[in-house]
Length: 393
Image 1 (cartoon, rainbow, N blue to C red):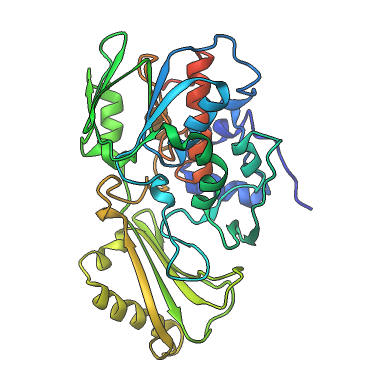
Image 2: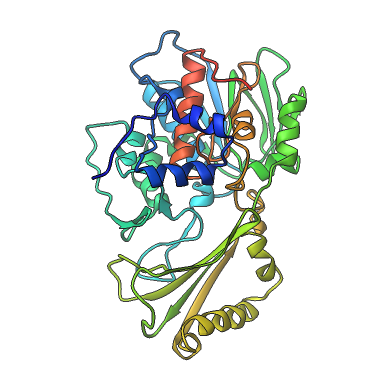
């Protein structure tokens, strides 16, 4: 029997008193059979049913990843004017997929569902819409069946807000020194009353966006010192299945990085035999300088050692994606071992004008997953419209 605890008022306290990392906190929850709720302490009330001071200005969202799309979707439900500025030519950010490699979408970034599957209806927030999302348990998480996080947003979220997304609009400067906020982009100047920044943390770390005035010294320090892991994924298809269904082999798991091989076609309605390689942090180093051909040889050699020389003789093709080379992302994600207090500071708003949403900008209870990006968007929108300030550190 699994015992479920309501942590809506105590999970942050557990992390605080023990100074746990994200990994340690989630591990303890798993051992105790505790389910970490989507609606954490900072979202204890319903956003749409508790708007005390309706905001009537314009909100500009920077970035069309999970956080930005979720924020825009909520604003649209509220009937509030908004615009999403996306630097690339497509939405989705690190939810990017490949649809040509296999009979099912290959997730080049976000792949697993790291929470309960009810999260889809919570993000959608619309009981009139019929949800058809098929998943399979992939302990301790879930996986999509012939779908992905990208597809979920593509089908259920984006159609409602697509016309509000301005693609190929690179933000260079945010000036919030006056009553109206000026946003300098590659397409010209934009003006807004509030701004939600939803770009990968690495973009802020390397200074691609200038803030006027400068962000506080504390916030700048946390951004500068954040350990952002490199990110790399590869997929290899084989003519025969020489490995156990659903296998996962952990090669590295430390505070410097992680690397696993796994059955990428597990649970899919497909005849493809595909092994995935997921690497972040230090584990990415050996792959960074390799050509596609060199990568093939290196990875097949690793797999031959794991599977008695069966990989090379069954090899068909492979696909790889290096997130460090994405110009508007430039890396993987914030280390699982970051200090929760630093994560909370990353998510704090600035002068009731500039807000943050995305996997790295949360309340410190959890971070980097798609559902935490959606949660942070709800938190930012709630703060704007209820004029609420969350736990300043």
